[in-house]
Length: 438
Image (cartoon, rainbow, N blue to C red; front, side):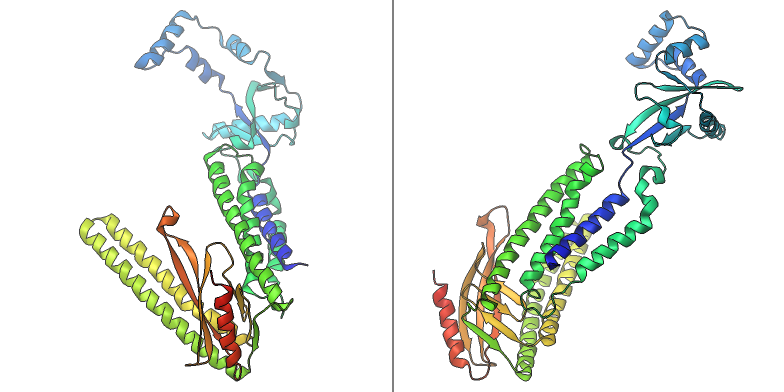
């Protein structure tokens, strides 16, 4: 199966696992044992305090409304809204409500509409009446939809019914996820390139982020604050992932033309000794560049953080300093690991480079300057310390709210020239400059 499709299947397997785990029961029935004496007292007993217009109005209504007998009061409340239960199963339901009442707890009871004897209830009624040797009792009930659950004390097993099959969901979801992620592409130059991996992982992220869009609709929580945030953030991330798919697809099409169609300025291969010598030198150069940049960033953050603490002298300034140091530590770890990752990948595979007018395949890494915001800068041939082309291009980076506050991030690539191919190296550098001359 296509590796990109496998990533999408894996992503939706994980999304389905999360949605199923948090999928609420579409509808529940909430029942509450009615305490008629308490309701009667609340209706006719005068308020303990008479502060405010509401309490004063209530006291006035009670003063001009003569009380009725309790039996008549109950009859008035349930008239036309009561279901006369005769199924013996209701005895157990009312016994449970009475037991909760006896323990001093809430008498709320939740059931699925498909459970017996609650299948007998009608959405147009409000009370269930049960008669036995203990007398006449009523349960007030209401049908609840998923968006009304909120903080109601619904048992987790009832609120999320699919968790009953949690083990099967976990095995299925993680199994499909691992299967979809496991594909690597073998020895295929295009499938193992950063461009193809970018397409696959961008598609994977797009599928994951689409879950944020689906979540409120599947869970019936549209209209809540969480659903608004989920849809907004999910939309932004989903669109960003689609942009990633588009950009990496352009890169993949470019290297396909270079590798399969032969539309390249040069194709270099190297002996193991020659390639190893280059990778060691390139790793040292990259590490030195990253270290210098890290020193500048660390010094800047340290000065800004300490200056802020000296000026403000409060707890917030200490937090700001801590966040700056944490951020720069994370950047330092990335600067340390990135050159090692590139070096490790270069050592593991034989050196192979394809150079095109609009981009380059550098032993698996793909760089292009034919996308929006990218610009070719220069290409120069050098003999020392090793014969190589120093190729430079830049990417537009936004630093503020508009393009007027932007800057260009420069990327330098060292392209080794095999022994005996110096003339071709010089010619390729000149062709790159001519092809990208504006």
